[in-house]
Amino acid sequence: GQNIDQPTEMTATEGAIVQINCTYQTSGFNGLFWYQQHAGEAPTFLSYNVLDGLEETGRFSSFLSRSKGYSYLLLKELQMKDSASYLCAVLDSNYQLIWGAGTKLIIKP
Amino acid sequence: ETGVTQTPRHLVMGMTNKKSLKCEQHLGHNAMYWYKQSAKKPLELMFVYNFKEQTENNSVPSRFSPECPNSSHLFLHLHTLQPEDSALYLCASSQEGQGNTEAFFGQGTRLTVV
Image (tube, helix red, strand yellow):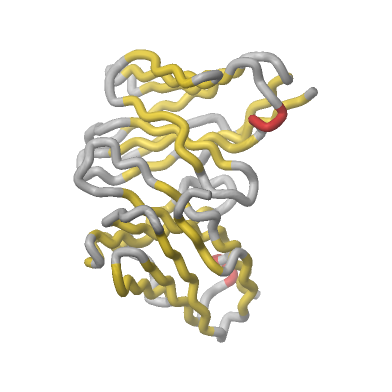
């Protein structure tokens, strides 16, 4: 079967760095997405990786290793507004998005 | 504002009621989706419409009935739901045919079945 694993919840301190991991087992791979979802809001696109390596966008970076079936989202200089759920999703061989359950990130002052 | 609008934002309905959820996208996309999001569970894909044709129905109970009258509008008709159907229902759209098929989501309808 297809499976996406990510931690249920993480806590970090304002100004610090946090890494949210995602491992996947899917039938085929056509890219991996990270989305941010604030409580009661729509998920919004953060990043897309299809090749191995690191993609950086401002304070956020996303890394992919296809051979290991592994990705992480790195958030630097954490701000209180970064408190949200972070969803990992993989585009499989049928171009269907397979979703993880999301990681709830709690930022403390 | 993501370009995808869902109404209503909140809905409480009894098990014998009939209601409809509405989704509208202003992005010119050719594919629309209904997802169910339950607490601490992955997003569950329910239905996919591509160019107004239903291309995916992930074994969804018949008490959920989708309708896609055109490429900009998507409905989810609800009938005789169960309490376990209470969840956040998300609509999304994307442009199929491109490698990076980023999905744009609406803010969802929080449904409570009593």
